[in-house]
Image 1 (spheres, helix red, strand yellow):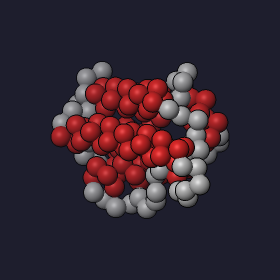
Image 2 (tube, rainbow, N blue to C red):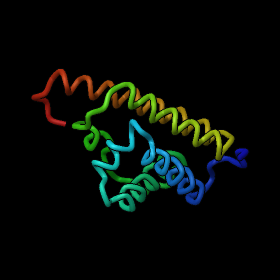
Image 3 (tube, rainbow, N blue to C red):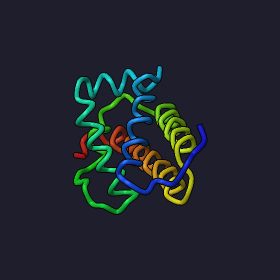
Length: 130
């Protein structure tokens, strides 16, 4: 499959999110963590991710939330973030090309870095409130 266009619409966001999370669910490392936490609530999670990426990439402000707290207690470390980024980047590269596709990969890298820093801080300072 060759990337056709940039990420320009909610339909593109949905294609990205649906494709990416179908890969996450099947992944040996990440699947058990995501499936164990989300259980039967995948439609709600996907809807939240549509709104998140729609806000971030399209500047259509439909997401209102704090992305970090749900991840704070997960049993994850650098290898999980590396795999998440690998799958995300592969998905973008297979489906899209252009400025927004590049921005999506850049933002995903920044989020992974920030989440890892916050996780390290809260694990070293367990009495702080998230």
